[in-house]
Length: 235
Ligand code: ATP
Image (cartoon, rainbow, N blue to C red):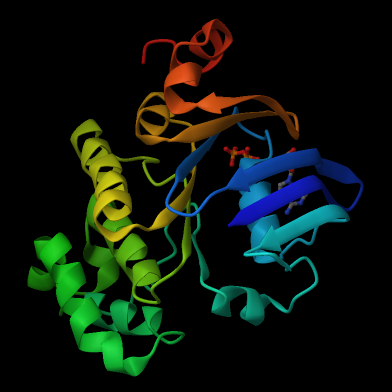
């Protein structure tokens, strides 16, 4: 479904990605782990087209999307939930969800809203509440739901567990797994919480200093000594 080949991305003179190859097949959960500054967020942003890859190709469903206008990339069904959630905090929960379906067929709105509320009953209870007053976990769920309202073909999540209490982290990863299993959503997940992220992943990559250092199934990487030493201490 998605293929990055030899992708190099720069911020001015700083090279954040140095020839990265990554693939995501339809129906997979693929996880990307790595230390702070390894280039994980840059990889997701490069797929969305901002910043652009300076070299290499980004292909989605057989189409080179490396030079497409940003809105056209989103229209192909690629949705990112950025780090830090970025919900509209002054708008209500319901308004946030309405914003999410601007790219979708309005005919699906009611159905999709019911589906989100069935998945996250707390959001239904809080639908008239300002989003900024939700708890951290609820805001993350809202951010994920908002992205789902556009029925993405590929959902990219940047550190969905960041700053959340352990119980909520478990819930978020369960949601990710449910979305994939029950709705067939293809997911590219970036995480520092390597233990949970590898457990739910079909396949995973370890990014180090802008390069792919290791790849394998989630299980393989969970038992890899280097991964254990570097990313799973205390996990
Ligand atoms: P983290 O988990 O800390 O978010 P990351 O793996 O997502 O890290 P990136 O945010 O992709 O890493 O950053 C990769 C490199 O690019 C880092 O060296 C970072 O300092 C640099 N970088 C990221 N964004 C910018 C920017 N807007 N301008 C300049 N350099 C940047």
